[in-house]
Length: 551
Image 1 (tube, one colour):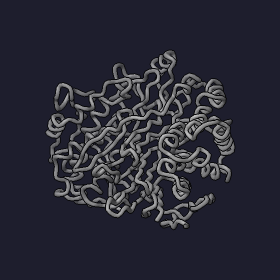
Image 2 (cartoon, rainbow, N blue to C red):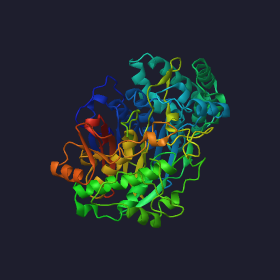
Image 3 (cartoon, rainbow, N blue to C red):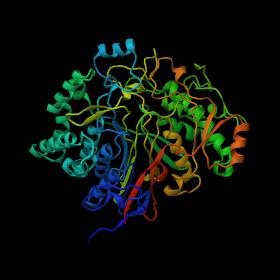
């Protein structure tokens, strides 16, 4: 029986036509029971929907979407960069995090070079971590999917074969080399996928990448590629109003959203009213406190002992809540001390988002759900022969003595990429992904509370008025003097649609108000109604996001 589709307003045309869905049929919102995808480029959403219609699950569709995003959203993400991903597995009834982020080079002499010369802050192959995105895509399909690499990469090959940039034919050739290995390998589906993945990280493709690194002054070597793996980790969880919010660990900024939600538990946000002066004020002040702890304590938990349990504890929450003054905007950076249980410790006294990131959320008819935030900071260093672009995420580390996020051999940078899955009664009901650097979890907070506190469906939640602060360190500046990376303290950027009287009241409380007509970050969202099973998907059309669903 032919599957019917629910596809909405045309926002972006694409010449590629896949087996079952045209990219130029895809709008910014959709609903249905058969599966849903919301992401950046329409061609990537079409890739994911096609896989769902062909019988693939959310993991298969997410991998197809992520591979295609490296083409449709090139400039915001590249296949040689990074992806954090959160997945709910309906069979095991569990949430897991997959880390598609590579680490710094393993050679201690290279790390010494960074301390002597600084981490390049404006883009350089010297600042590229091990490329993690491709391993993430293949590992996701291997562990949680049902399909082959050949199947999930097929929509991307169609995009590449249609022509475009000079490197398209070379990336297509690289993908086909992986398919060749998959086909030639004996054994089950997982073994075939692993062989394809290993050709990139341990085989002749790795040799070609390393030759290019050496020729172009990069530091990565064969041992770095061979040592890389896509780690499967437990999520960081926090309960909020009966919902379980799941985030990646402190190699991302994600847990600070959990800290912020804990602070907000003590305030009646619904009584304050959506977008009232009190509502905007308390969210902003809570975010500032979360940011302060993020910047002081977070780093790769494989290298540093982040006191996360204490940071999320009730005792610490109460101490930090006491710092929120409803009549005044803070113009200080105030990290606390979760070990000694002090509300504030002495701190050394945002810039606009400079990187590139896109978005991906997927749900299927079997109850699986994926949220991923693929990225790659520009400018890219592109290995033309293979069509593989590299970002420069090592600039999210620093060379500050004793800092939890200082660069070390093999260490993952503390990135801004921060996908979200939310459970209700143990089942996944919301997936959110946001592009926008230090704005990401600020916009996630806006969208999440729009739903949890005020009952908004995704189409309304992602288009409602948003706001953000630059009251934090710039996550893309490796300056060893961290105080010099601070944005504008007490700043508050608001959508120009916010009521003028609310803006005036916020200014009276000390917020430095700036209005904007531009989208504040770039969100996509899926909500699965637990009673009807209908999936509601949307992406902010002003931010050029797209969504589609199968009826």
